[in-house]
Image 1 (cartoon, rainbow, N blue to C red):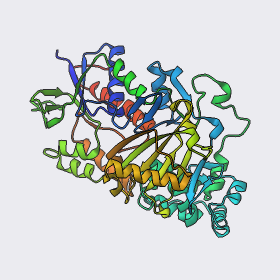
Image 2 (cartoon, helix red, strand yellow):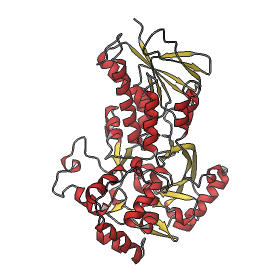
Image 3 (spheres, rainbow, N blue to C red):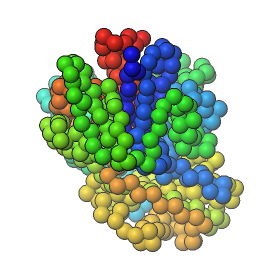
Image 4 (tube, rainbow, N blue to C red):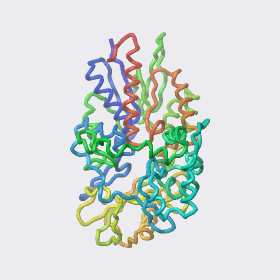
Length: 488
């Protein structure tokens, strides 16, 4: 009997995790399955890109993960990287918002971007007295059951008012999704807020009621594997995770620098499960009993358009946004600002090209050598993508002007690194959940085909890793139904 073959297209973190999970489960079960992974670029890891230069650790994509979403930490530990996990510096656990040219500290007690402590909210300079009074009206909201979806912007306006949305919620949300809160789906981005509204009415009262009791044991107090909280990273950058994954994929056939030319369903010969043929640009053809598309949806759409036009149309309906990160290092003596926090975010209403600035060496001191600071600036978001088209010199000039205006930095940078990410951020706009349901309906007629990645059920790195694990589980579960093999 020939081995069953699984082909994964896309070598980002989701594709790599899918391959690793398949390999380890197949190894444990000793079943005849072969796994192949195809990536158009020679470099693996997708938006995870770490450069190590002269003692600096520079992240082109994500720089950390939220430990409360455990899938990234769990994977790192499985790969033997547990001793490389480092937490964000607790001494600088503050985030600022740039408003009217000044940096204002975000009020303490935000949960899911919603304020849950009265005193910090009353003391913040981000909201006017009228804005604070309007936000307080959330306390008298009654429980309600909504029909259908609602945008994040409309929902927060309704509960907390426009000021709270524009000056606190929107810039934090944009830091996650690089999106427009007036278009993003609440059901797809923060569904827990809908649950809170349904049960309590007031978001503030509901989130306070759901907080763990102070006397409840926490993972940090108990120690052990779950000791991490807040933001964590790897000592030498998140690229360590990709490097470890690749090193562990000893039973996966890798095709890097190979673009997929065409996919076509295999002739069925009466099979219920026909499979697919994947033609590479160099002419080789890979046979797949199960085919995983771990690519952006616009790429997946082109691969299936010839024989699944309805699925392709649904995939094209998920929009993307382009972004860029520019990291700059300065001598510490040239920066007067204390950089006493993790950085700042910029509300859309400020009409600036800058989306956010992370004070990288304050957040993770191991990112810069002694005597230097490392800053990372973010550009590009929904309706502000044109800035990404500037050349390198213009981008650096723009960012330096922003840093001079906000932090007073006039010095020449000692180091600059620019990373552009065209169409890299999927947007969960209104109706996203319904679009995913429609995609699932199409897939029901295409056995052996799987869609996975950040475009579907979570944009964060931990969500992408979870998607890879779940995809591997689904593939093996489905293959176990075939009469030729039983996968445990």
